[in-house]
Picture 1 (cartoon, rainbow, N blue to C red):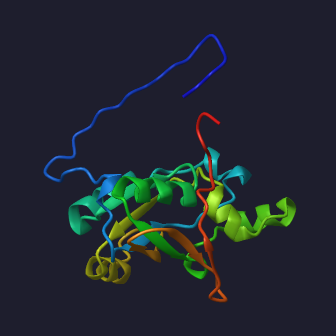
Picture 2 (picture 1 turned 180 degrees about the vertical axis):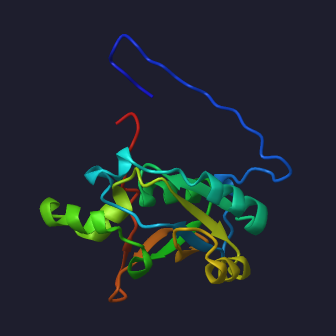
Length: 183
């Protein structure tokens, strides 16, 4: 955190994961599915002021499915995925048509000049979970749909690069769009 003001307050919380070791950003493996809870984008229209963190979902994922890597989408899907990619030394293919776009992202796009997908990739403050899991675990999780919000498979982990596959099949670099601290 950075501030130009005379006051800064920091809060640190510690916890215990019990019998399940923590899931880090650094565990993604080539061949993993990339999954996300809920829908993304348009947080500036109010979601960022009224949300429920996916803590119970994270505990269930950890205890029942054991994802390889996980992060919450606080800075934006694209930039938070890049955090996983950097920590895990891997790449990603993300399929644009599978990114769950929130209705708020569609509304935000109407006045912003950006496509709803761009809002879903970069708005941030969604507080959904972004995680990777082996293909068999991902299929089981997608079939189970154990949460009150959907789980979507949006891509796969590859050896290197960060590519967004558009609905027409065209590919472009997936930029690390989102909130950047200390700009």
